[in-house]
Amino acid sequence: MRTLIGGLLGVALIGLPASPADTRDENALDRKGQFKAIQEDFGRAQAEGYMALRAAKTPEEQKAASEKMPKTPGYVARVLTLVEASPKDDLSLQMLSWLTLADHGKDARVIDLLIRNHSKSPKIASLCEAYSFAALGANKPLLEKVLSDNPDRRAQGLACFALGVMASDAIDASKTAAEAERLFERCAVEFADVKQGTGRLGESAKGYLFEIRNLAVGKSAPDVETEDIDGKKVKLSDHKGKVVVLDLWVEWSGPCCGPSRAMIPHEREMVNKLAGKPFALISVCGDGRDVLKEFLKQESIPWTIWSPGLDGAGAIRKQWHVRFFPAVYVIDAKGVIRYKYISGKELEAAVEKLVAESTGKK
Image (tube, rainbow, N blue to C red; front, top):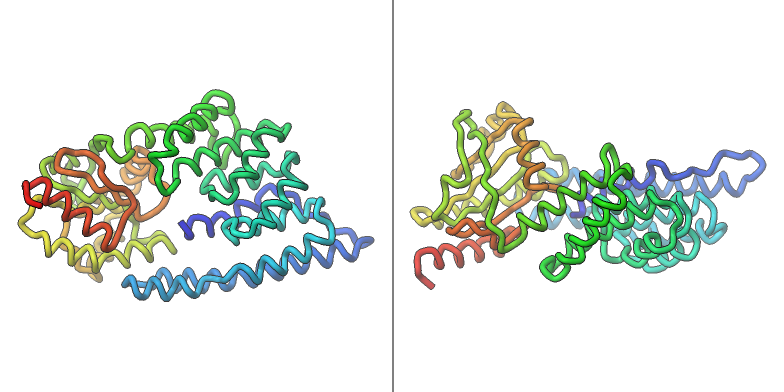
């Protein structure tokens, strides 16, 4: 999730009002310049961390790379000093919005300042739009305040959608699924025409509603029809009777590819360990086949690879509502989704449990 949130720092600033340059107000120029310098410092540190994460090939290397990501408390303190000078102006809204994404909403002071000074401003819609792609629990009080009190319909709709995302992505989503469904249904009815990125909230809500109703743990997995790396037609249902790990990933996905690559050694070990058992690991690669074939020259992957091509992969991502990589589903021998978004030892333990169930062994 860190990768996705980090990518949204720019989104939060799109559409947010920047304080106009005014040579009569040297203090405003100074605040704006200082904020820009802080952003640049953070951006450099974040880029270094992402480069290390992309190069990581083992869980240990991935952990070390994560330590290189910028530590936010120092940045928060620097920005809040600037906000204190004029907490209600547009530049402060921009700075606080940036902080909630850079700091992942950890500092309650930032949320409190946004609620007290900006929750009723139509201009907060841009921040709500950023949250609508990946909302964090710490921001819930702000989003609820915008939904209930903001007079701007777009801000309300984006806040409603972000609250739905938050409920959908909860650690125990089974407990919040009904809340998420209610919020997305409201978006689909009341805010369907509200613009979100290049689309509309109504269409985006449909994707989440499909995921809640068809891709939740305990649901029968929808079939997938696509092609393997040689262009042969393949289907997920061909593997019914086996425990299946469906792993949707891309080799080229920037920082996201670090976790995908880091999973390969452990997945290779798991496949070898379960050889001869009713088990299949299927990686659905979102790259073009030429890119994938070059990647396979570097990595030994002794399991099933599906390569739908860019258009086909896009269709699968849309069907399965994939929002970040790697997206992992563990499906039991009866075709029921039993686990989602797990990896490492947790994935191995889940697979071994389901294989034992399918063979009648404990």
